[in-house]
Length: 338
Image 1: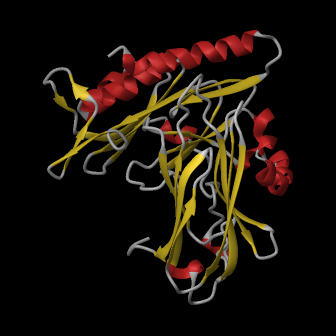
Image 2: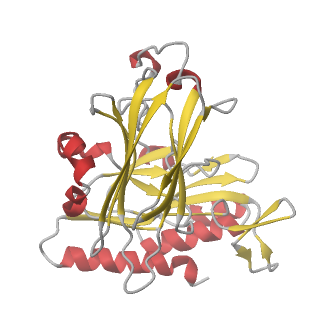
């Protein structure tokens, strides 16, 4: 079980070292969905939905945290599909069998190693056992999603949640513009699939990546994804930053950090639901999808693809480059219920 909290131990040591330097007032360290928030900062923390099938699907919850650690563990991103049954990578040491009673467990705790160890343990224990264990640990709050979809939270979890109506991309139905009866804004979506090239030699640095939409006048419409580490290097995503720097610099809440089960790197899928950055539905018409990637000690790449989004499904495959090996844009009808 040591590997269940080794990552959390490392990020806590990294945060402590940064704060001890004397030049840092606050820091957020996030490694694979486990994170530490330290110093004079309240951070938006999005909790990934284990039933989501895209990287940027709406989170199942959003927290506002300061000086806390968060860890999420679950069976939904790593495991093996055998004869139609999904087997978790988390093994119950009592039986030697893959754990299957819990889909996801998120733990907020004062200490990072506590959060990491408990998140994994809550995937192995029964919900009743997890509740009893957490009750004896001061400052520990949790959100458990069972395999049947039942949501279980600690008594203090709701005190950590961001107020209703403040969730990303959701300004309430009353503020949304009505779109035409046809087109992307009503019953279509755009799925962006991309694969990042893995660095084959030397010390690997994951590239910063931005994926966003512009209208036919080149005005920004929606940031679909923005993956970065330190704010000081965000301007390296030159095209995205040119369009969004005013918004980003005046509203730090426009972005948040995500807690989720650790996943394997490489291939990613994300969706554009036909709304702008304020949650308003857009009209059918011409849009440009931009994908920008830059890597420390690496290269800078910018991909563009114009699409006429109406009632005609489209599938476009884009040639890769040094940083991104392949991209597909799948403009399609939304699945029933979406």
